[in-house]
Image: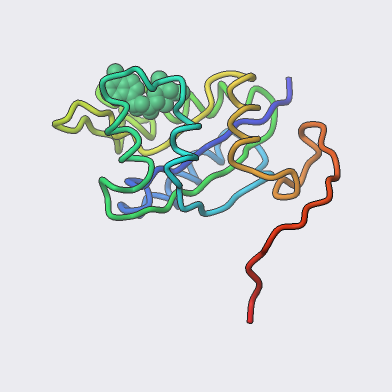
Length: 166
Ligand code: DAT
Ligand code: MG
C-alpha cells in the first residue's frame, strides 16, 4: 500500500551535519519526498508531537532535545516521504529506538548514542504506523506545504496577521 510517513532530522543530526548522509540513506527506499521544511520547534509543537510519552521519566529531556536545548540548535528538518510501505521502509533504514540495539548499519545505529541522562539521542524521528503518520503529518505540515493531496482538506477564510518581506 502506498502511504506517507513523517521523518524529522533532529537537532543532533543538524549539529553533526548528517543531513546529506541521512537523505542519501533514505533515498535507497525508493520513496518520493512530497514535503520538506526546516522548522524551529516550539514548546507547544514538541509537547503535541510527544504527547503520548508525557508520563515517561525521560519526557522532560526529550522535549529539551527536540526543541534544541541540548544542542544549542533549535532547528530540525521535517520531511514527508510517500510510497509503497513507506512507514516500514523508513523505520528499517532509521533503526530501532535504542541506538545501542539498532543495527550498526542503520542511521540510529551509526550515529545515535545514549546520554548520561538516559535519553536516547537517536538522530531521526520516523512515524511508526499509519495513524501516527497521519496525526504527525497534519501536526507538522499545512495542506499546501505538501505537493500531493494526501488527506482531505477544506478552504477556510482566515483574517490573521502575516509576516511578509519588506
Ligand atoms: P521512536 O522514536 O522509535 O518511535 P518512541 O516514539 O517510543 O520511539 O519515543 C520517542 C523518542 O523518545 C525516541 O526516539 C527516543 C526517546 N526514547 C524512547 N524510549 C526511550 C527510553 N526508554 N529511554 C530513553 N529515551 C527514550
Ligand atoms: Mg514514535
